[in-house]
Length: 276
Image (cartoon, rainbow, N blue to C red):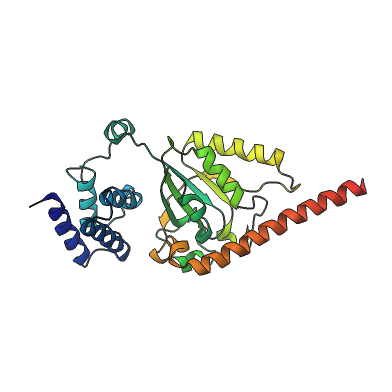
């Protein structure tokens, strides 16, 4: 039996498996269709990259996790994950993770996802005190979580500093009670850092922005250590692709409020200069 036939048989079994989650099944179906129609020579590589964020958190269903181990050449689920050095030697790709909160996560995926070097952008919840929070629970404001995005990236292609620049450009760092039309404690702007180096870079970036920003208000975006990131429900993942019309409307409103804020700051500066 040819290699592709073996892979297709495995994909079919996983797709028909009642234990496979809906989101997992959608990714498996896409890979199966691409292999069957020869639409992509990299269907399995793309599937591996798509599954990787959940696999790294041991959050795939068991059979799909076993298949993921096969994709990366792992012999046993009980084996330890390869070290950074071993990973670099294997495929010359070392990834890092960045976590940003900046209002509704529906608007935080697209600005990052289409840049070279971005492997995955996942919507979810973090910073709270309960396990496995749901969307409805987070929006009560009682869980302590904020909506955020977890970005897995290749630092050899795009740096953490560049991600910070994107983040500052799509958020209002002077608003502690939400972002633009998104109001509530679960929409607070926060940078969650995974390493000491990330914290130092984020702090330096924040300080530089405070010195150069025209807005006289202080930057209130917090920089705190990353805690457990919980993936959001499937319907919230890649919202801009699933509901493009609604996303465009939300994004348009967000940009209008961002421009209004900048104009307000400009008028205040002009008024202050004339007053002096």
